[in-house]
Structure formats: C-alpha cells, structure tokens
Length: 330
Ligand SMILES: NC(=O)c1ccc[n+]([C@@H]2O[C@H](COP(=O)([O-])OP(=O)(O)OC[C@H]3O[C@@H](n4cnc5c(N)ncnc54)[C@H](O)[C@@H]3O)[C@@H](O)[C@H]2O)c1
Image 1 (cartoon, rainbow, N blue to C red):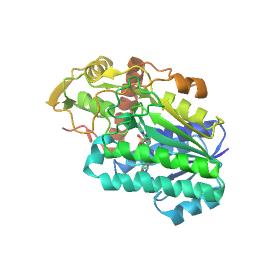
Image 2: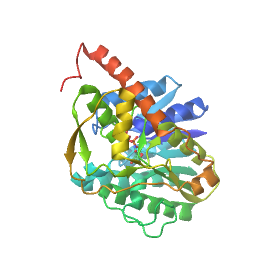
Image 3: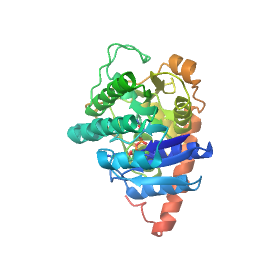
Image 4: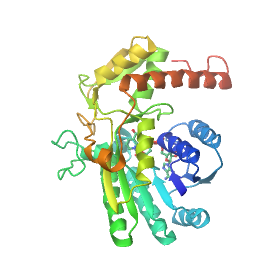
C-alpha cells in the first residue's frame, strides 16, 4: 500500500513510519517540523525512520492547500494516517485559536485532498480527551454524552465528526482512533512520563498535580502502533475505536513506578490540578478488540522500565554530541 503519514516526524508518527516501512509499504511523511518542541528531536526521529528504508519527506504545513494537493498528486497515497496536530491539553488553553486552526482546518484540507485524489482510506488520530467529564466509566465509543473540557479535546471531536461527513458523502473509509496517553521511547518531552523521568534523573522537582489520585490509562507506543496498523486493514465505512490499556494508573502510582525503574527518589512540587485536566481516563476495549483484534501487550511496569532505558541511552547520545555535561544542568 502507498501510505502517507502526516506528523511522521513526531513521537507516534515516527514509530508508525518505522513499522509501516518494515511491513514493506511505500511510505511518505508530511510534516512541518515546527518548534512545538526541539526540532532536533524530530530530526533524530526522521533519521531512525530513514534507517528502516526509503521514505519521502514532504516538509510543509497541513493547512496549506496547494502544498497538500501537490503531495497527493505526486505520491498518490492509497491511505493516509493523519497524526499531524497541535497536541496537548494544557497548551491548548493558552493558544485555542492556533489549536483550532491547525487541527480543524488542517484536517479539512487533508480530507479534501483525499477526496480529490481518490484516496480511499483515512486513519485519524483522535484522543481520549473527547470523553472529558463523561459519567460513563470505562469510556465507551458510543457514549452519547461526551463532555470535552479543553480546546484540544474540542478540536479532536470536531475532526471525528468532519471525517464522518467525508465517509458519508464520498465513501472514504475513515477510522478514528482515540489514543489514551501514549508513552514509550521518544515520547513528546512535554508529556508527564518523559518530563518526570528527566526530572528524577537530574534531581529536579516533579510538578505533582492535586492529591495524586488522577488516573490515566497509559498506553505503550508499540500497542498504539498495533492498533494503527490494524485500522489500515479493516473494512468498515466509518469507525471510532479506543486504543487504550484499560488499566488506569494514578499519578502517585506512576511516580512510584518511575522511582522503582530509576532507583531514585522523586522530589515533588505540589500544585493544583490545572483547568482542562480530567479526573480519569479509562478505555473500554470491547469494540476495538472485536473489530481490530486490538489487545495491549505491554504492562505498565515493563513500559516504564523500557522508557527509562531508552531515556538513558538517548541522554548519553545527546551528551556525547553536545559535549561533556551539556544538557544535564539544572
Ligand atoms: N501522545 C499522546 O499521548 C496522544 C494522545 C491522544 C492523541 N494524540 C494525537 O496523536 C497525534 C500524534 O501525537 P504525538 O504525541 O506523536 O505528537 P507530536 O507533536 O510528537 O507529533 C505531531 C507531529 O505533527 C507535526 N505537525 C504539527 N502541526 C503541523 C502542521 N500544521 N503541518 C504539518 N505538520 C504538523 C509536528 O511537527 C509533529 O512532528 C496527534 O494528532 C495527537 O493529538 C496523541
């Protein structure tokens, strides 16, 4: 299959691209390599992808219709895995217009390009945040009372609905995957697990929100990628699926697991729960198991151990590249 991966220089996108290449698919990446976090990290991600096989890189913005049309004309994708977005709940409260612009307009531009180019498959990266403050726990895809409480969550729900329109009107097979806090090697540096590992390893304080009872259904990245690959092969006109772990872990348990894996004690800076954060995420996996054969394999303790191992190797590499002691201060 010819597969276009938007956001392929990012955390989940680069893992997806590696696995798609290993599977023998013709692959292209569309990414603007913006500075939401360090661009060198995205360049390192791309180098790892390139080591798995030949991949075309189209550098540009998903909101740029002429550019996106050119990519579709040149590469002629049979499927799109659309991961490019402004990600993250908390920063979306600071820049709601930017989040709406990139996520909603960008998705509309891609769906239009797919329609014009005759691309029949579209996998969209949605988020557990669309459930927001729903009272139905664990979260089920057919919940009629979704209550998103951040601009980011609102954009993801809007894009699910917009992509439904394209499946209905133009027969594009759309699969929306609701990811639940994905972690593992190369995790975005703004997300809690990578931020906390860095803090513990460098002796800095962890920003610890609330009483530590907030629960997140952390999902190891290889399990998420299994779900994405399965979504590329199912035969349904439109579907929404949870890709979680169905095993919520509290903030306190998460920090304790990092302490065990690093053999270091965490220092906590206690802060109030930020607006936009929900008390719990918890995926019901009945539907995704039945339709996608999705079954997460990596237990949380094992996933944290692998992430710490990766972090240490990555840090050693960074320090060697940038000189002795660089990047470890503070
Ligand atoms: N990481 C998670 O826990 C998680 C959870 C739920 C949903 N998601 C969704 O999964 C997707 C991937 O997340 P990630 O954690 O890998 O994030 P990421 O920031 O590492 O990757 C996103 C990539 O998209 C690119 N991008 C952003 N805006 C762009 C634009 N206007 N044009 C072209 N490229 C652009 C970025 O440069 C980046 O490489 C996102 O859509 C995110 O909302 C992630």
